[in-house]
View 1 (cartoon, helix red, strand yellow):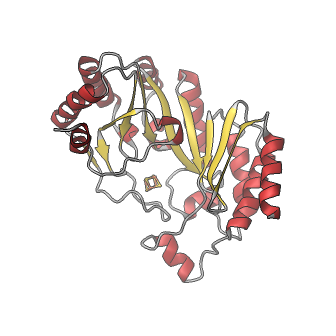
View 2 (cartoon, protein in one colour):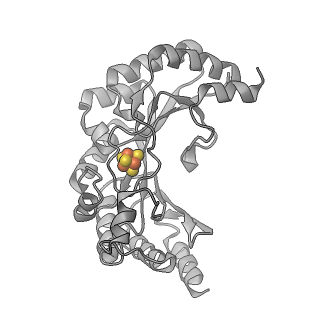
Length: 285
Ligand code: SF4
């Protein structure tokens, strides 16, 4: 088999979605789909949720070891791979040690409740075994918006879960969705999201503006007039308000979807002024 064919043989889909920070990380598919699967805006959790059997994981690991023998970091694929219990995660790490002994660090996507279900002792153990970073869609700091979009978490739970990660030294990278409150709740969304994030220590805030996908409940809601979709410029003004209100430390802020064609990026708080000026410039075009 060619390298290309070997890669294809270990992933369910042709396209693999890794967060910006993990683009160069080797990926091992340990699960598929999302265990929650209810957010009304979500289009990317199409697969029925499943955790792959250990035999498949071990088989894929052997192939990945041939392809990336010197890698030291591994990304566990699956919409929320951290939903697996600590015991299962540790068993997979044990297998990685056998097949890819140079790997020392692990990262994956997680929901907030996946963290809350684990005890402090389990989180500490997982951090000790190399789980270094979780990528988490927090989406909004407004409880009413989180509830309306059926995210299944509250802002208090987000703060609690992320503080527990702080305690054990697991880094977290969060995603926020500008526009998720619609026109009526735009201000609330920006201010409450800043309020929530200011109480924790994300390494990175990645904004991905709302896109209404045709096959989602939120699209239907908008069609019936229950949700007012914002224009890209309105969303950017909302994002400006978010940045203005953020007091996070040493945090990379980025948005790869600005006005559907630009990327803005800057370290907060150092580059807050530059980010705001860049947004003002884009809004003046
Ligand atoms: S938790 Fe994430 S992957 Fe799952 S339904 Fe919600 S947005 Fe989609």
